[in-house]
Length: 291
Image (tube, rainbow, N blue to C red; front, top):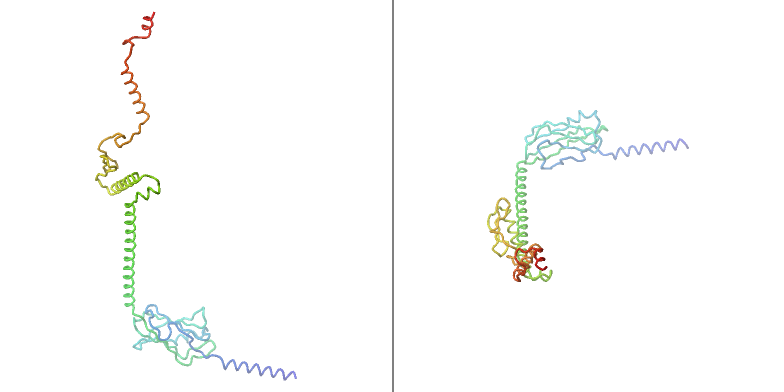
């Protein structure tokens, strides 16, 4: 009985091994980059990546497998290539072209059926990968067109921003010019005349500041009176002549001036009333006469 069980287990194991061998995938190319029929590959520093569906990393097969790759041009001339096994991947081979390719040209990479995997299985049939290089002159034209378009966009956008800012500044200046004294008077409680006078004075002051920045030597009136201020290059203002504060309509008197006027009035009143004391008479002589 024991021998029968062992025999049955051995038969089952043998059948499993044979079944796995029957369903094992044959060696083939899984994918490539560039893929077969692709276009637009750079003609400079060209390389082709070929991925297989089995392990092909056995160093013992590297030399023989390197002879299985052939790159030809449209004239059928064979180009020199270098085959490198990827150390990070056990199923990829990198085929590097040793020279720059021609632009806008079709090439064919052929992998021989003698290519062998680590398991010893052969590729059996030749495989081909075709690709075309791109025209770099067209790339230059496209780059120039894109640069011109970008420059035009930048100029257009900058002009729009500058125009918008200029319109904003003009609107602010127009708003400053159009001050409604009645609304301001209602809001602040000040008289319309005072608001108009203040607005005009601010405009004149601003004009003076702008003239100063521009180095303008023209005359600028600060008031409606005859006083005229002229800007000169040494940052000084010149007036036509000194004038008292009363000339501007002010009735304010400083303490010193008020005392002087009061003393003058008192002196005038004494002079007008006259005196009974003889001229140059002292106090002692005055007392003697009384005795």
